[in-house]
Image 1 (cartoon, rainbow, N blue to C red):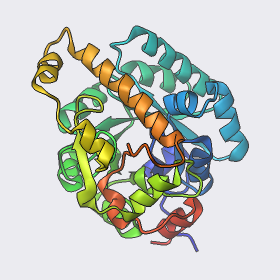
Image 2 (image 1 turned 45 degrees about the vertical axis):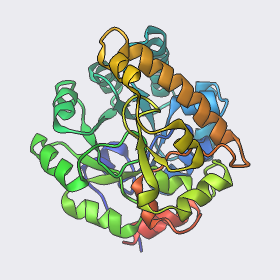
Image 3 (image 1 turned 90 degrees about the vertical axis):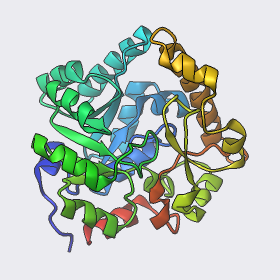
Image 4 (image 1 turned 120 degrees about the vertical axis):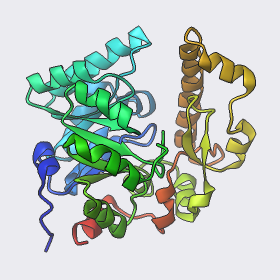
Length: 324
């Protein structure tokens, strides 16, 4: 019999289990998002992935996911505002999501106050990604309802602190905190809850599933990898991103060169450099996830690979967690 994990987070998100299927570019295909929600957690739509990689007009994609599950889904809003056109698109996506009944949002990379205002008007909830205390201050000033604590074992843009250190830094804010990074087994899940986290966010674990449409070589690389195979690259976005160490990543290099570092320090050129990095990585990661041969070995993953031993269904993974 499934245990009760009810807490403030499950109540806010209207879900059974305190498990978030982390928003991933490019791996958050609609079937994966729906599977996480249908199993009792909450799958999070990554709009750029949904539209740019998987080819759905945003509203159409949300409606397709709703056809696969009646359970709540969420949306990730990357709200960095240096690009006016992108910001306008994100505003549209948030409005469409609200119109389609989405009420749980995760914001990243910017000031979340305008998202909070819009979502709260519709009775929704906003959690914000943070890697350290100073970003939590800004998120709380923006009125968020909870924090996604991104630690040094996370995939994507990893933090620098351990999950325990980060929890200690954030608990004084008296908001619900989600552990993001290093979660792939029921023991990891239980340890996070025992620390004081109200739930966990998993990305890498859900790539190695039957519902994820990432290429089989990518999934097999996650299964075979040890945590020592995870490296941090500055060449994806200008700040460290967790990747599986592959021949392509070695050729690309992990560090920015002196000229790139200089451009990233300048207030006038840093956004241009980050845009260049982002466009290059968006294209490369999209090609990698659409290439079923696995020849384009440019694969994001976190150190939770340590506990991933096979490719299996989302339902089976979450069922084990629910019985832990």
